[in-house]
Length: 126
Image (cartoon, rainbow, N blue to C red):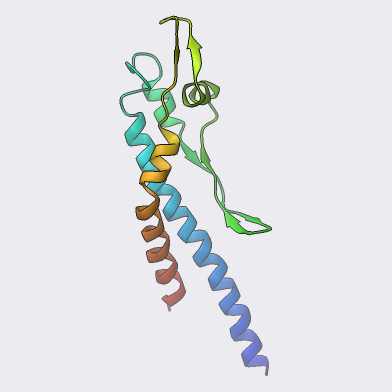
């Protein structure tokens, strides 16, 4: 009976690690796609290209009521202004350039594959 309990505990721990590792791998795929989209900046790239590009981060894996989650984002508010739209004081017009959401959608299949690959590798590791 004790051996069965030990196996169950080991399985649960390995499953938790596999989910965490899978989410980290999936987040990296999405981060790379966002960075590709930001490589030229939001418009001309004259002002914010490198700063926003280098601010793309993935947080720590968190356990939520629905399972595990990871957040991908930036701490730069003006990236949010470009994504949601703003009245640009330099061009004097309303500008909106979505990069984050389309990048997340377009990389969903690759992120899912990365998650699966890493999850299986972690679960089957000796």
